[in-house]
Length: 586
Ligand code: ARG
Image 1 (spheres, rainbow, N blue to C red):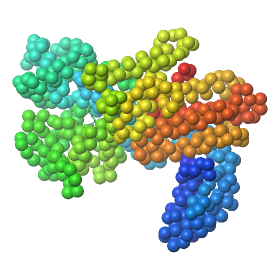
Image 2: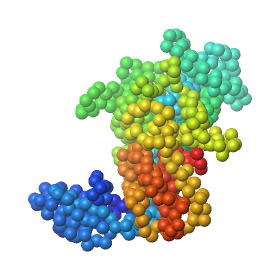
Image 3: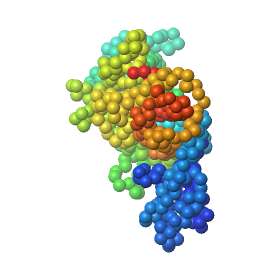
């Protein structure tokens, strides 16, 4: 269904037209003086310039016409030319019923069926998932859900970092430690031989060890480069070992992402783009873009208007291995072939912005996607500790994501008081949901580009703008509904507005659809967080001023229960977009 602001904009635009002005002047927004009116239109100011007439006279014309419309309780002009509007209760209720009847509860559906490939997560195989990957997962998951909630077709891809030097380092180190493993022998045959079984704890120890070693031991570094090259060129034994590393890593990754309620449609990786690298090279050669520079193969992507230096993209390094940019470019070819997407969005740390500028420019120069395809890097800032610096472990190391998640879930477990939950499993699940809600909301409520401070105590608070407060509001509604058991199944019916608190809540409900439009336009889940908080606060107000459970007037009571049910649905929808799972009680 159309959003309330759209509908009102149409009404006011028509009034402008009828009065002889341009239709486009009728844009209606929520009022920034809610004490005066609900909505406002500032079109008279723009019109004044075009029509050389004072804004107040124009606004008077429009308001006079709008006054005749039965949907407005108030259509007034405020100096020097604002048009202030307030709806009648009857019309607000009319919209409210439409929302209650709508399968999408008022969330507007984007008509063109756009296809988006959403690249987020970006975990690296063999390296443990660290806090840096938390934001990519949380923000990406939410953007995916937001786009889906509005009817867009989204394919999410984890885009595993599974093809770079980190694998070469692990393989080289395994080879040094276990030279007799069959996968290191030239007689290895993948059809009959198998490689030894690895474990996560092994990988967790080996990668940092090998990485440190490569920095001080040149010979080892060149062995790792060699191993990377051989793997990328189909060495049988290395490929078999790589598959084992992938198996172990992916099952560990899935466990972490499951805890976070983050799911991918595709678990492709950089390695899946290998078969497109030749296609890429051919295209670059065809267009005369690729040239040799200091032993590497590169493409220039500088533009005249660049204010800072724009180095060329490296397509093949001096040792002839593929680079991060190479696999990203080849992956664009793959995505174009598989999905022909309208948009490819990359949810990746904003510090990688140079990389994406280079990759996108190169992709355009090489014609890897049609001109109209949107390639966009949706960057994000860092999660900091209380010292304002990127979040670290106590001893200053990089925090593993699994350790952080355990800390969060344990703190949540300690904090929740759920005497009715006797089953330990259930208590753990509730603690997980609350902990994850706390962290996700604490993250998403900030605009993605901003850095923020990880403050678990504050995130876990029942008060203030927190995920826990939102979950708590839903459990409160659940408990009301339980107590009025016989009314719960009633058909939605709000024939009248009895109190101001109710009117405020209804006003927020009928404006909610618009916030989804704004959030998708700006690719900003924080807008959904703000609206969820607004709904929850208005609900709390409504709940405190009206004694729903003990109300003796049956009509009032049924109306309020209807409103409880709709608010609950809408809040759950908001949380769903944020990737937060509600709990029944807490
Ligand atoms: N693996 C990369 C990292 O850890 C992130 C990958 C992001 N996605 C992409 N298409 N480059 O930094």
